[in-house]
Image (cartoon, rainbow, N blue to C red; front, side):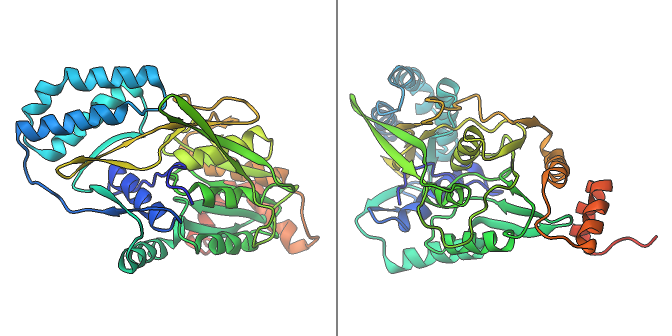
Length: 375
């Protein structure tokens, strides 16, 4: 499992924290070198320390995926060196550097963090693996919800793509739950990305044959290499084929979640409902230590679809049916009710579907509250 494939996990505690947490989790469960959390090295910084940090950051951005922007990033950082030297608060410095880089690159895969320095070790300790696993297990391996909605529509809500080895079994269980539904909605409106391998595992349920998905083209100096990604020949649960599939998106849909939406849309396997995604079509291979408790994440790769020969950078994945994020679920649910062909003939199922079609929002509300209101 690669840490370089769209490693981003967002949440209520702040996007930078969860980006780094996603990198840690992906690396701890990967077969290669692990990325582990280091200790904070300083509570305040001196101008001399800032100079070292700035020089290290300038060297790091040389490897940014787009050489012309890399040069502009270096110029931007150097131009602000004197201002950086005047900053004593490490968190303020990290935030300012991040803001300055993103003003040039317009890429949220440009990041400086303090207090969560990442070092590279050959092997994670058992304690580190256990901590990562317990966090993921407590987070449902990214599975926020999986259920059958009234009218026999499946609904899967994923907050992130877990890198834990158990994530595949969780996805398989979810696909078993929705296997008998007439249509399926996958909610990625709050999905911050995560493990590309787990994302491909989910995507594999919607393809009959092994299919190439978007590749990652990585820059290494003057060389570029392609890392291809293919759907799996085998999946643990039942495939979901020949039925309507809807994917909900928003501006908070990032990285691996965007790739899933982009590839399923372009292969005509899914209809995208909601608003455009964030446009994070770059990826990186890990954190770079800047010293004194600072680290940087600098994207050195970009996503390229074998179908479009392009990607969605800055523009985001565009929805097929535009809707405010708050209305995306009722919109897709109404479409799914109309498009789904019943898998089974039943008076009870017909009555349930008719009631849902009559008032989709009320049907969803009843599903949440668990009991119909009295007449």
